Amino acid sequence: MNKLFACLVSILLFLTITTSAFAEQNYQFPKPTNGEVMEAMQATVPVRFLPGNPLYFFILAKEAVSRFFQPSAVERSKFDFAVSGKRLKETYLLLKKGDEKRANSNLKRYANRNQNVISQIEKSRSQNQAVEPTVSRMADDLRVQEKLLFAIYDMRPQGNKDFDENFSKAVGSFKNLVLEIDSIDQGVKNRFEITKAVEATNGASVTNEPSPEPTPTEATSTYTPRRIIY
Image (cartoon, rainbow, N blue to C red; front, side, top):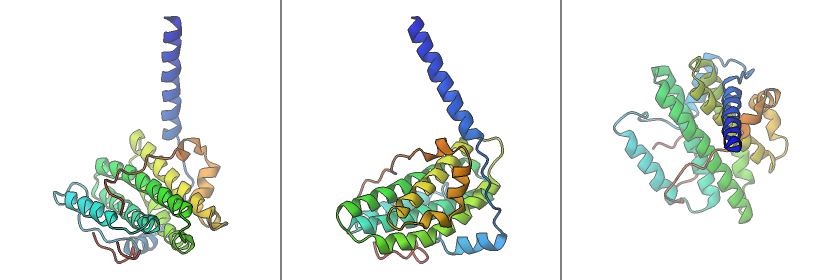
């Protein structure tokens, strides 16, 4: 009985420490200018409907169908990357509307989609597909996502531990994707302020990899994130 009690106390202590670690993250991110945010928004996949709109379900369904028809893992990585940028843009717009609850949920979708990108890149490499041009383009476009993450952090609701935790996971997924690309194109990680900021912070809790976003299908057209409309 004493052993069981001690075990329960240990678990509760671990959960308390983990929650505190998420809540206490204080990233030293630069504050983006309005011009930088607008440029990032324009460079990201257009958004027709936001979560909460009755038609948003059809957007997700169309994405799932489109992904199914991607002909290879490298093409799926491109598709997933475009969608991850879209999730981030939606999160920013939801915060602008004051919809913190849906913005919070969307951060989880963003982190999970980034993990899908990583999984598909690794699958592409295992199948000897040429991934270098794809990851080079991703590295360029991640600068856009970085600006949006800075803006979201600046707008984050204060005192919301759940939001802080999901934002930490989003930042962790961004860093993990950068490191995956850096393993192919060395030196890429040095381009990003986020990798420096996470390393300068107690980032143990943000390096946890989220589960890949559930997609009922494995599946587009050539990757053109600035023109794709779902």
